Length: 253
Image 1 (cartoon, helix red, strand yellow):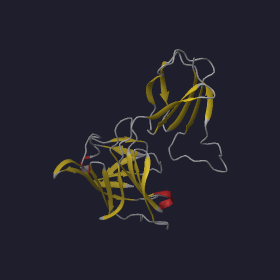
Image 2 (cartoon, rainbow, N blue to C red):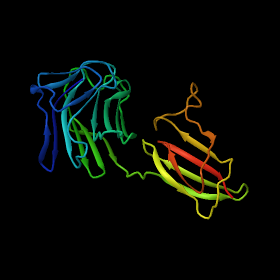
Image 3 (cartoon, one colour):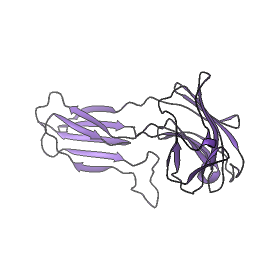
């Protein structure tokens, strides 16, 4: 694919405008084969992970516009935005899944889809006008002036947790959900508990991607894992994995 006329504006003020006639100055590329030609940034390999970034991930309430066209391959092209270092970027995938579908991924989650159902949705060699509008929690994506995907971003908490006492076993049960794409380091503090006895357990349900699911070929790809856990006392550090549901069953005295 290749891209040109990349512009970022905010309240009528231009924050960035590409000039590929002068090369790819200010752009950071990863994988692929990136070159500049005819005032466009071109990616000539079939590497699905090829990426190029410019600008500032902290920009907010902006409008991103660009022209893009497919040069070959099975799918269309991808527009990434708000890609902070170390974080999961948001992506507009145009002509994905065999060039039959548009997807909007926000913070690693699929928020909106636009299913065409027929192949060759993004035509090879044709320039498309792409626009992404960010306003507060709202995201609206346009292709050739038509809205194709939109989403309202939710503010995810680092952790959602609840705790209680199992009267039959005498165990304190802590249940926590980490909806984020990175582990969350915490300190767990049990009130009115003097010691935590041996025999405590952790049960964790997680997977590398929030989109993972089981199938007949891999029926245990997403399944709970139960293991013994040792804690030093009623107050202890604990790391909840990314994209996880964790249940701690703590034997107390």
